[in-house]
Each structure stands twice: as C-alpha cells, then as structure tokens.
Length: 303
View 1 (cartoon, one colour):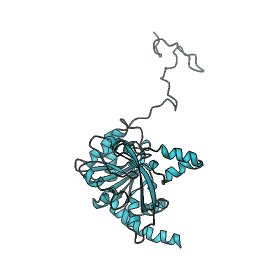
View 2 (cartoon, rainbow, N blue to C red; view 1 turned 120 degrees about the vertical axis):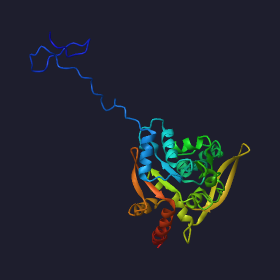
View 3 (cartoon, rainbow, N blue to C red; view 1 turned 180 degrees about the vertical axis):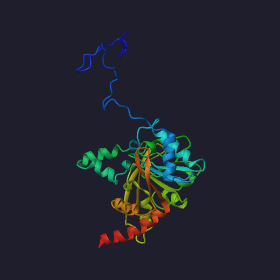
View 4 (cartoon, rainbow, N blue to C red; view 1 turned 135 degrees about the horizontal axis):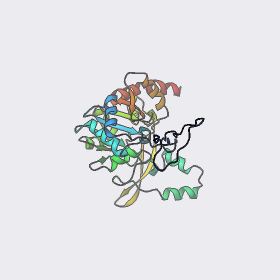
C-alpha cells in the first residue's frame, strides 16, 4: 500500500518532473511579512537587560523612554515598569517626566501650534487651553511609560504646571516636593533632588535631546542663562487661573553636542534594553561634565 504524504482532505500533487505515485509532502504555508506576529518581551528579559546595563538596586532612577522602540511588550508599559521596579528593589525610586508645555502661551509647543493663526484664532485657541491640575492633567508627549507611572497607585507628582515629574518608591515625595514655579529644572525641582540623591538617568530609545538633567547644569553655570517671561494656566478650586512669572530661558539646542562629547567618556554606559538602544548616566558626573562643556562651548559661540 503506498505511503500517504498529504493531510486528510487534501488532493495529492505530483512532484514536478516526476512520475512518482506519491505526492510531494504537504507543508504548512510560511506566513508573509505582514502576517508574522513579533514575539513579545517579558519582564524578566527586560530586567536582565537593565541589570547588565548597570541600573543599581536602591537607586533613584529617572527614565526617559520611547516605549515602542523597546519592542512589543507582553503587558505594554506595565511590563517595563515592573522590570524597572524589580531591578530597583524596595529601596529604589522610579522617576519619570510628566511635563505639560501645551498649557503655556510662552512655550515652544504653543508657539508652534499657533503659527499662522490670525489674532482672533489665537485668542480662541488660548481661551480653550485647560488649566493644569496636579491630579488629573495627563502629561504631553512624554510617552506611555510616563503616563503609566503617573497613574499608578502610590505615585506622587511634583507641583509644577509645566515641568512636573511623577515618582514611585520610598524617596518619591523627597524628589517631588518643593518644585518651585520659578525653577523649572533647577535646584528647587526634582532634578536638584536627583543630583542630591546621587541618582541615575536612563535614556531608553531616545537621545540626549530628551535628557532633562542637563538643564540642571545650566542653572549652575557661573553666568547662567538670562531670565524671560513665562505664562501658563492652572486650576485653582475648579477655576482656571493665569500664572505669570520670570525664570531662566533654558536652551536644549546643544544637548546633542554635549551628549556626543559625553559618549566619548567612560561616564556613559551603553547597551540595549529589549530592542532599544540605551544609555545609563550617573547624574552627578554628567551634570558636572556639562557645566564645564557649556562654560567653554557656549561662551565660544557668543564670541
């Protein structure tokens, strides 16, 4: 009796160029590129990557993250947050940016949004801007991980209507309390607290343009940047209130350049977390390096 070479219900096909009685063995069709489902990454794999990169147990860790570049995660941002908190351990604190520059009439984001509008359109746009609420206002363009941490049980958020941060862990309140309105990212902000705690910064799938810790170096320059006017809105007892204040005119345009210089030093640890490129920075050493770099290169640029 001939050997059967096809699954039940399928007609035999003769091998090309052969008169054999047996059909060619049937094989399951290989899915095309659009049909293949990427394998998801789990918490344990990410935790291994974070430890290999050098994330310290018990540290205060600021994370700037482009989650999609990490890869498909089993439970989305919860997977990465769980891996981060697992590596940091019960004594570690996770810090993320939850900034909201869209509620300010003086921010770069706002000026780009109203470009090309006439006066009446600008007034309507400004009138529709919501006031910032520490508890409920979502972050803007900070990513899915930041929003997950902000909304997590036990998370606390610094009280700044433009440059807030959210944190989870035993030093969360210490990092986020006392965020002064006139000090976006300086000594009286979570950046000052992170420096005092000898924390770390993780750039995950992002470059130095996202590294808010570098702004702390601007505040510490012998001749800091000039001040300028700021305006934003917050909710007070359910009513939108306009805030006008003066603060440093922060400038991140040369952050990629100072980052390139940092990458040439042994201060920065490079690796991968999931499928994303990653840099781990010791905040004290990086801020101190940036102070010197800005002092030389920004001064030269002004000449």
